[in-house]
Length: 152
Ligand SMILES: [Zn+2]
Image (cartoon, rainbow, N blue to C red; front, side):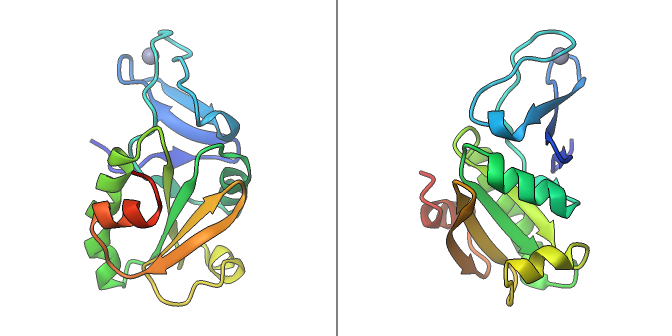
């Protein structure tokens, strides 16, 4: 059981629950359910955090997603970030189909931290329509995070 999804410059990679084939859901189509390219079964909405590994992927996700994107900026050395990880995963499941939750490792992607002016972590930014709509910092339970993010 994986605890996160991967992505590339074009979309989120979602394993089919029926046949386990990897399907790419284009960022622009995250608001609708897709069909598996192999078995044609309906794919669920993403229900796990998306692990961002490249600046281009981050930029495209934020710019193209029709759903709000909530990003967790974290680092391995940060204790509260470790405590937050299972809550963020839980929140991704609760918000499935209504928001995309993504994680940015600030040590691996310092360029994103700089452009987003991240200071204390964990930091959370909600992006809507390609731009920042709200931000908060510090550990919080999944329910509180989603209330803050206005994803009920
Ligand atoms: Zn399939």
